[in-house]
Image (cartoon, rainbow, N blue to C red):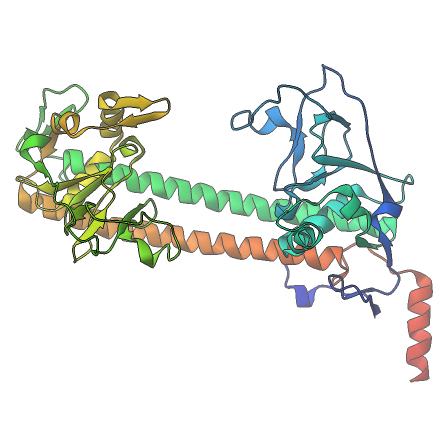
Length: 451
């Protein structure tokens, strides 16, 4: 699918540009400022025009083609402008993150976009310059340039683009570069998509393995019985069913000095020492009266329990958490709080957290201990709990390893894609279909004949 850059063909002659972000270019390429190549359009809009959005991956399309959630509709579309298919669109606030591309539809956009069109027909390819501008974004140059223009700002507007010195290959080469990059990047993106799907499937498989293990055990032939709880269903016949008030106690031990290590809940890492992950994070001035956490306690963010924000403490020493958290210690029937952490991530329990939680303000719900303790759970014998946790750890390690390998491959593919784009748009490689002008080749042949 891909070839190493050093094996790709190169141009026969390069020249120093004197431009720090261009370095060298093929000898027959020109350099021109954006304002001599593009003009900024200012078109009227109508009520029938749909909103066009420029995304950070360079796609410029009707908002409805990607998603409609997460956007706030303007009460008054003051300053909105017309966008046309084929426009080079620059998102002033997000250009540094790659939000530069060519629109695939007619519509309208907010005034933070610049809609650019070539000054002369058939002189430049907007697609080529979209690739080039995203390359400048990926290297961090646009961000540094924007900050240099306006202190504490990442704005990159048309007037900034207009004075930017751009490489200008012959139009035939621009089109060849675009065609080459479209094909290659599509292949890379498809490969990345397949690997991302594999990661999703592996994670789903892991979750199913865990859910089945903590609710049905490891022996698929074990006799089952009705738990008597509709949302739990059948459980192994030899398992017990107990309400959590018989399994957990709430720990309300408080720090007297606030000197214990402050812990935090991380979706990625679990319950960890905050200073090891957020050295400069702001915390309360006083940590006196924070809740004490011991090893093998279960810590809940009561406002986010329905989002799975609860973890066993595997930390070997005593720490503290915010008083807003709930800390539970094991009372009976369960040996390792990790078992409950796995069980509570089952969709049935997440659903119960939502049902039993109480809304405190719009968008926030709190799971109180009294409601949690009324929930029943299936309980395996202690030795079987150990076997289940060992099974989960073994299989999770294998699946996590496979996911990590796929993620490393995705990272390498993204790095290759960025290198490929940079090499093509700056002439470091000569893409298929490009023929150097005859006068350049003749000059080189004559020079070599004299040597």
